[in-house]
Every structure is written in C-alpha cells, then in structure tokens.
Image 1 (cartoon, rainbow, N blue to C red):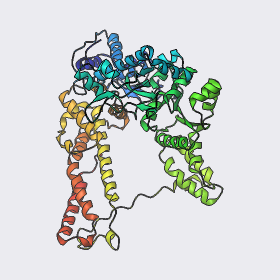
Image 2: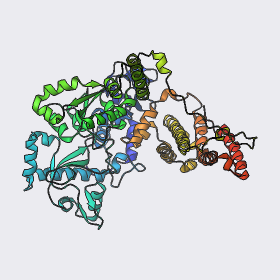
Image 3: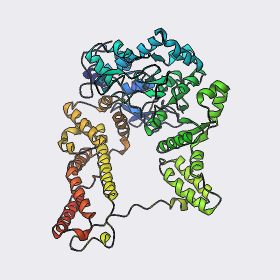
Image 4: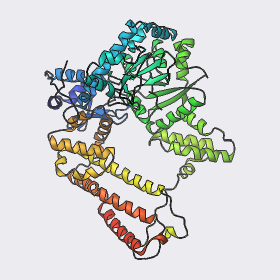
Length: 620
C-alpha cells in the first residue's frame, strides 16, 4: 500500500485508543493505585514490574526497560512492522488508515516512515539477489558452496539467502535505471563510487545474507566471497537505516521461531546462526563485525533473561569474550544471566552441530561458564591466589569490574564471592574503594601569592582540564535528561521557556531536548504517548521510554518551577563553560610565570565563577 501515513492520523489514533484496553486484551492487568501492573511479557520475572499509565498512555517495565505507547506495544508484542501495527490498532478503533504521498521524517511524521524509500529499495535488492541464486548461469557455484556447508533449500529460503553475480554493475543495471535510483543505491551502501566518479556494485561474486532489523525490514547485507577477493566476509557500511553496533543478525528470525525466548546465543558468524537454525536451534544471533556492545545486550535482555556467548577457545576468542563480559557488566541487573561457551580449537558452532548433533550442542550451551566464574578466572590468570600478594592483586584487579555492576542482589553476591576468594571480610573489601581525585585548590582571592598546589610542583598535565570538561559535559547531559523527564510527564510546560540559549550547548541529550521543545512548541497538544511515537525505534526513543518510566522520581507538585529552574541553569551553561575554561587555563599555568595582570584576571575570574556557581546550583 503506497503513501505515508499522516502524522495527524497517528496522533488522533493514539488519542482514541486506550492503552489499558490494548494491553489488557493480551496481558492480564491488575489495578495498582492509579496505574495498572502485570508481569512483563518481554522478559521472565516472578513479581510484576510492568506498569501501564492510563493518564499518560504509556507503559514501562522497571525490570527490562521496555516502554512506549500502544502502537509500540503492538509492534514489540506481536512482532509487527510499523504499517501493520497501525492497521491493527486502527482496525480495533474502527478507523481506516489514510495514506498520502510525500517523504516522512521526525518533524513531519513518524520517523519510521522517514526512510521508507531506503527500506523499499533494500527489499527490492534482497529479491534481486534471491532471484540470481535461482536463475543466474553462474549461481551453481553459490548453490554448491551452500550444499557443502550442509544447508538445505528450506533454510536458505528462511534466511532469504541470495547470490551477487560476478561483474561490476549487475545491481546497478537492474535497479539503478534513473539518477534518483542510483543516488538511493549509493545512500543504501549498495553502490560504491570511486575517485573518478564511476559507480559499481559493492557485492560481487558472493553469497549474500540479508540483514533484517527487529521488525523484519532489510537494512543491510553481508556477503561471503566465492572467489579469491578480499575480505572473505563483507558487510554493508553504516547508513541512515543501518547501525552495526545496534543490529544482530538472526534476531528477527529467532523471534519469529520462538514466541517466548528463554535464552539467546551470540555466535560469531552468519553461517553459525543458519547452521544452528537448520538443526533446530533457532535462538542464535551474531554481531556484525563489531564487538558485542551494551546496546546489543540491552536489546537482548528486553527479550529474554539469559545470553550465552559462544567463542573459539583460542586467545582471540578469549579476548573477544572478555570484551563481551565488560559490555555485559553494567547490564547485569537481578534476574539476568550471562554465560560463556568456549569451543575446541578449530571448531565453530557450524561444525560442532553438524558433527555432534543438536543435543550435544545444547548440552554444551547448558553447561556454559557463568559470568562470575569467567570474570574471576580471567583476572586471576597468572596470579598465585594462594599467596597473600596474589590475593591482594586479585582484589585490586577484580574490584573495578565489580563496581560496574548495577546495585542489587547479584552485585552484593559478587562482592561476597570476591571476599571468599581473597579471605577478606566484606566490610574490609568495601573499604578498598579508591578515594576520589583530590580537588583542584583555588588560590586565595585576597592574596597575591601563588596557589598552594603550584609551590614546588611541575606544571599539571592537560588531562585534568579534559576531566574537568568531561565532568561539566556530563552535568549538562544529566540536567538535559532531567528537563526531558519533566516534559514527558507534563508536556504543557514547554511553553514556559525559550529554547534558543540551548543552541550553544553540545551533546546528544541537549540536542534531543532542543528537538522536544521545538516539537512541543509547534504542537502544544501533544501528549506523552505522541512524543514516544515520534522517536519510536531510535536510540532517542529508548531514552525517552526510560525517562517516561521514572514517574516515581517526578515531584508531585512544583514541576513548572523545577523545569524553569533547570532550563535557566542550562541557559547559563555556555557562558559558565567559557568562564571555567579560562579559569582552568590560568590555573594550570605555573603561577610564578603569570604576569601581574594575569594574576589579577585570575582572581577576578575566580570571583565571577564562585558567584555563578552559587547562582547555578542544581534545582532541588
């Protein structure tokens, strides 16, 4: 069905439907105060942490972080793409979905519609490659390769495998018949332009693996070479619709095959995912040429409570596993599990499942090493933990990792486990927390003498200025998020402030705050559900859902004044940053090297900074 869905219709649809009714038809809700609660349908839990707010028309799970409006719930719960979810929701409200021509975008419509032409082109490209696998004269080479790897036609169809024929311009000729189509193929990463301006196909003489996002849309491709070209495996570049640090190959198929996922495997390659699926192990995914990231893991934990990383047992595999563990630590909330499976050298999941069968491989997965065991064994490598020195070094090495764990029972148990391994009591172990960095002493404002820190010392290193800048940037980010949370809970307050001063501040959160204010001042009738809809499916949307779920942290009264105060501090921030930078520059110059004029300037700057610090206290 052609045409963009008008944003006005989406807003009206969300106004008409009741999110409580939409969710209650699928997950039984119970009244709890002014909200409704249930056990979360997106992850395993024993006590309800899934909350639905009828006033603001959004849901949020305090366990796994899932959140959004009624439309987002349908997309995630029933695994629907955006248009189908709109159709389903509209049908339940007795409405017909209108369509209109034109390009969408975050300002004029749902962001999911903004790159519609790219999504459509990628689907066309996937169809073209599938046809080549069946029809091209040289496709037999690709077919024989897949057969040698033990794949059947059925599994190839399930994962939409294709063939990019040899030659420089097959796809260009097939789909790039106009300059506009050629530009779109370049934007999608399917065509490459060389220095002389010539366009040619990115994928040539390769088995092609379409990469689908969590809603089933083709966003990129991977290709395995059949000839002697390098690299052996090639992925699409980053595009407007493909971010390799967020996507997982095979995740869509895993969700299609498993109505309720209990565990996800993270393996290293496309063929591992497909081979496991052919043997009935349909819960495997793979990263796309990147290390496993915190974003990957948060996405996994929204779907299931356990992840098992599967790596080669060699040194490279161990290093990759350690990086995965580092990414997992901040995500290890109570109820979540992470384990590590190391295969014998020369083996991978593909060869293991073909050689030993699905049952043997599943047994290996079930006996995979828990995160806590892998962490302690990794940091203890090379240490004599029977000696006092070895135990002391184990504590010093392990503590930084344990402190990355979120507060909860698991974190406490990990500290207790370290205490048992080192022979220290828990209280003593907790006292090993490193002290905060010493404060930067400022010179006395009524003295012409040098600051105490400069006496007899070398000039401080520049990284202290960098750390100071980082702390300021983090502070602005936190304040921007606080302002966003207030807006989500009471959108009408957007009209109380002027967003113009924010233009001088950098940072993703500040940028999102600017966009949110612009949207609300342009469309003051927007409610929380509409705001979540505008950014649904984006990293910004995930942040908005999390902030919208922090309702219990929002004051019951005085929201307007708190918002105005927060925005006032942010508005003064650019000048404050410049002032602090000037102070840092002078403070980190040897005081004895300053001229009398510079010393006077430093005193005046410090007095102004002290005054502004007093004025710019973070609002209560």
